Amino acid sequence: MKGVTVNGARNEPLRGSKRTTLEGGIRVPFILSWPGKIKSGVYDQPAIQLDLHATALAATGVEVKTDWKLDGVNLLPYLNGEKKEAPHDALYWQFGKQMAIRKGDWKLVRYDSNIETQTGQANQPVTGPKLYNLAQDIHEDKDLSAINPEKVEELQESWNDWNLLNIAPLWGKASDADGETSKTSVKKKVRRKTSESQ
Image (tube, rainbow, N blue to C red; front, side):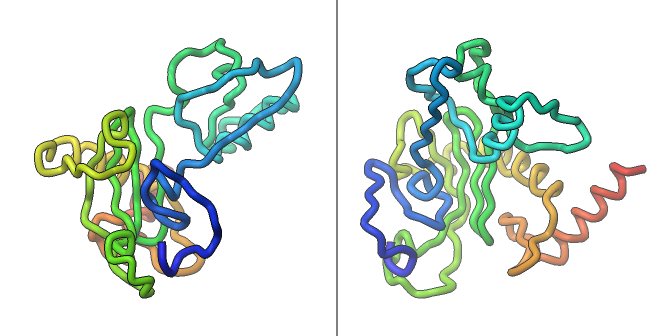
């Protein structure tokens, strides 16, 4: 994508690139090797880099305390087949005003509109919400938001709930990626944290 990267990486059949919330920006190969401990094979369920922390702690025998509030999941029982279900109900991303949530095969995303314009100009707006079914459309071409407004609402609500628990960034502007101002975002987060501590 012009203005984003000059490297020679290719990510077909995915769309988007580094610094975007499309699959081409967030989906990467992930390889673990631990002879005698992890069975060889391919694991197809979605995982996220936050899982590395919990997995490394488990691998070294460190007991995770609940007050640490880790976002990641220990992947070892999933990789070894002890657990069959997906490690996450949903995965969430935020990059400035870009956002994404994946729940099962459904993905709601707002991404850098430079993907479409290909001008390379800075500070282009993000797109409106787009809904994709990744099982049927890995390239994220067919926006299903108009015919599935209830799914858009469900996923946006889940993302908003997740985002309320995030701490405002130390640089740039806080953004709910749903049209709310950064002041509103921070107030909602403070209000939520205060009510949870009471």
